[in-house]
Every structure is written in structure tokens, then in C-alpha cells.
Amino acid sequence: KQEVTQIPAALSVPEGENLVLNCSFTDSAIYNLQWFRQDPGKGLTSLLLIQSSQREQTSGRLNASLDKSSGRSTLYIAASQPGDSATYLCAVTGGFKTIFGAGTRLFVKA
Amino acid sequence: DVKVTQSSRYLVKRTGEKVFLECVQDMDHENMFWYRQDPGLGLRLIYFSYDVKMKEKGDIPEGYSVSREKKERFSLILESASTNQTSMYLCASTMRQANYGYTFGSGTRLTVV
Image 1: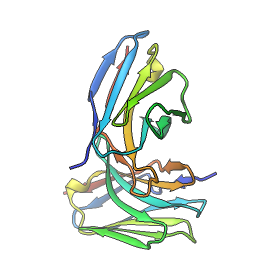
Image 2: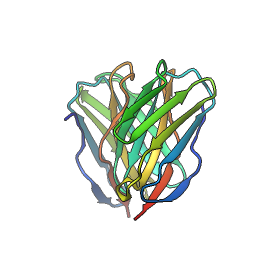
Image 3: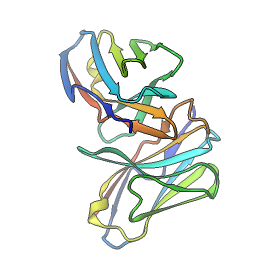
Image 4: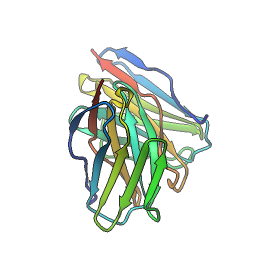
């Protein structure tokens, strides 16, 4: 049974810092891994999608990597800004199921 | 811009009422999903549908039903709302293979009083 873990649960950093969010999964037989952002009281916004055959994806200040053999993905945020404050969730799809992590709540201090 | 639209952002309903949550997508996606999100419990799958008129139970279907009469529309029905169904409800869709990832709606915050 796939389990997805995101550590830490919460993170506070000063503006301008580069940071890494982690997502771990137990079953490496996956189709893809997707990173989302969620603002309070809102839906999930897709940030990056990595297919199982890919190692990383980039969009602007965001870079997501995938290492299936170790069951890990990281989301790298460069030069963080207060507007990056949100909860970040990863979702792992394999077989006929998608499992979501509980998320990391990020606060970027101005 | 492709979209999943949930008809209401906020709803307040009384215990025992029948509640309809509507979701429409304009991406011609085959798969549609209803999740609920609660603090400490994360996202939990209620029902999903792989095609018109088809539905499958998710992890927590009790107290809910769904309807998919048209490809673009997936409705979640609370037959008799209860206070423990107070939650954030999220609709999502994907293409059949799910290789292109999920697109979520903006969510409906339902409060049952």
C-alpha cells in the first residue's frame, strides 16, 4: 500500500531564502508525481508534474526532482517571496490510485 | 485556460437537507473525482467516475451519492446532510490515463448546522 509523507509539516523562512520541500513515498511503481499549492480556503493549484520516466521539471523559480529508487521527490523554491506562503502538497499516482501527502505549510517572512 | 468549476464557494445547510454540489469541467476529461479535505485528515476520496453514467466508490462513500449524466458534469449529493459532513469539498478531473495530472476546482466550503 502506497504511503506518502511530507516533512516538515510546517516551515518558516525569511524572504529571499532558497528552500526545499520533501515528499517521500513507499512504492516506487508510480506513473507520475504532482506538486500542488493550496492557499487557505482555496482549491489545489498544480505547480509541476513529473512523469515516472523523468528526473525533474522546472517552472520559473520552482524545480521538482524525482528519484523513484529512493522514493523521494523534492520541490526547490528559489529566492522565496511572501507570496509563496501557502501549503504545498505532493500527489503520487500509481496503479489506479492517487495518494496525497498531508502537505507542508510554508510561511515566508518579509 | 482550462477549468474545473464548482458552483458554490460557500454553502450553509441545515441538518437533514438534501444537498447538491456541482462540478463542471471544460477539458473533455474522462475522469472526475470528489474529495473532502479536513484538518489533520488530508484529502479523502469520496467517489470517482471514469465515464458518463459510471461511478466508483472511493474511500469514504457513506452518506454520499454521485451523478454523472454528461461528460463535463459530476454532481455530489448528500442525501441527508449531517454535521459531520461539514468540510471542504474538492472536485478534480484528469484525462483517462491520468498521465497529465489532476486539475482541481476552487473548492466548496460546506457548513451543516
